[in-house]
Length: 351
Length: 261
Image 1 (cartoon, each protein chain N blue to C red):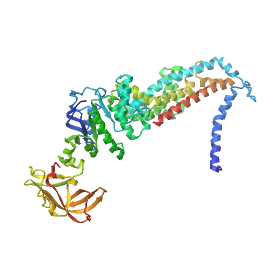
Image 2 (tube, rainbow over the protein chains, first blue to last red):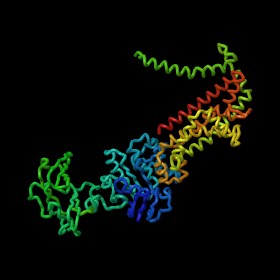
Image 3 (cartoon, chains in turn yellow, purple):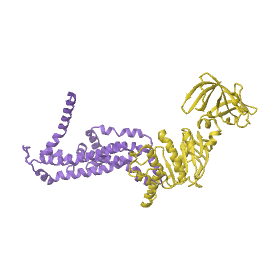
């Protein structure tokens, strides 16, 4: 196992700046997600770590060793491709055995280790099948077994679950997490799916336009996004634009919102509030002293069984509020309601 | 159930196609076993003409030449054609589109014209005539077929397979040996069989480029027919047909195999 250190890596393709001055430390044994929309540079970064592409400037170290002059096949990394890239002419056994075969592992050991790997991904007994005889989920497990059987230092996953349907995806998330924990391998995976990033990883890096915007644990990122982009890309967020005044955020209509910490800067500011942090209050007595209160008009209610989404409007700002379907009031569109939330849930973000 | 008229018409049509395709061939094959030189019926079964053929040095020599030319053509055309297909697939270079487009006209140009052009060119350039000239001509004819067949196979190749193999620790040579070549094999074999067939069946160009005394089977058969038909021709033709059909069955097997995945 090994840590991976990316320092000040930049890469451009022609005029397109794919990565600009990205530095991240992937800790030994960690499960790390690189999250971003397409074109954010996340896949480019993964390919650089794998060795399929090389930085214009900056350095990548795997296990403390600079890998600039180390070709892909010598980096000892396991990689799972988006479309799995299973060898179509080989059986499941031969696919998984490939990494051992090219390392001249003795026949008996190959047999034992492929057996272990297939057991780990719960595909024992599928040895002789060909990839085209497997379902999408099974193919993915084969790809995973193939990528870890030779005990690589690092496991790289490129959009590992995107080719699966939703039910299968949820199951594989649990599996992937279990296998990563059992094997204890440093894992870096690329995804554009925020839910996947939050549930699977113990650390997330958010990328946009080739820059690393923020990194941290899923909880830190969700609770304390630093940019409006991070707040909206990772989950839903209501954004309030206003002017910082005396440590508070003053909205256009004069409503004042208190924030997590008194605002230090002055001038135009944006604050984010998660939709599930906001409550619709009908009785003012419920309000605590450090609540922010806002009047808004209900536009639409979206019923989703166990939860409800309220779409509201406050001046020019569209708002969204989630509520558990516990004792949700029956509100009518057009009705004016009072919203309240904790000032600690009002997070100043960079626009 | 009664066959509807349209259905019946279709069957008759199909029957006619098969009759016109195969009856002449079957008649010829049958006559090669008839000891009567004048096609007297009923057939008097014998291997006389095959025995005679075995002593006909000219025809046998021509058959040997045909096979030699076809084999050399196959090796050269399939190696060059596969290399070209890989280059077209993997690299971008100037005039790539022009080159790709330039592959097709030779297939459409009548062989008589290609043959005349080759004869002129080979005379002018000092290459002359003979088996070496035939091989050059056949390679030029077979190359587009090989490139088309092999390219069709390569088109379905997922470059991630090579990337995956490398990430798993395979050296560039191991990638080619275990991933790229096994994938290309059906296309390569189909291309090679095409090249062999193009060369082996070739008459016009071989006729133009042969020198007296050194020719290929189709040319020799033509010459023999002009001099006077003997059922020995039926015998050797039957052998060639059996050989060609076997070859085509193999091609179709690999071709289907190549198209499937």
